[in-house]
Length: 283
Image 1 (tube, rainbow, N blue to C red):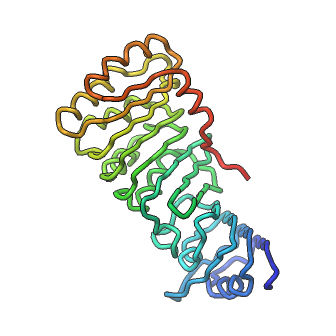
Image 2 (image 1 turned 30 degrees about the vertical axis):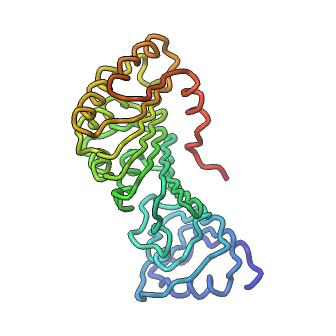
């Protein structure tokens, strides 16, 4: 199978299947670039320590089933794109062992994505199984990727407060090294940002980028002012705030924030920049 570049397997016979034959096959086809497993993932793993490198892989789609038993044995290049159930395994070869990485989270309609960017490339993980409450599911996935090391985070789309019990607040609380937080096209922005009034929430946060357009003209500027004021008084002050908005009164009113934040911007150009942000997943 040395020349094989694409492999599709669908609807295997029901019942338990071992990860071992999959690993044997992938080792025999080292030049695979595209893999599709449609209700065909192995269901149990009785072996440990074996790793198979898919160094030429560009895309893997896993639809149905639990991908963890298989992914735990695969070394996937950081340039690959993965689509599958939206709960990354806690151990997955080299997949989640990135340092100094940035994360872009997109929740468009009911299909969330997480894109990891590191010094050596990018990984995109996409939910192949659309489900409700996607914003909270994104946070649940982030909780499995050691959020204490995240330095930059972008949230695109979705409702930040979409249900009681969403763990987004607690995941953000764990991001002790977060320096840049960008929130674009999200509902309930003001309610979510209000948690930053606590100085033990993201204590190293320096830059905040917000898209105010979904607030329906009711952007909570006093709330943002309170966050800036409290953080400045407790040696956790922001250095930069950018607000994307075409609202002229808001553009004028933000000048008061400069008492607490050295660099403040608000204008339509920032809103246009957020329109260009790719929160989706292209083939």
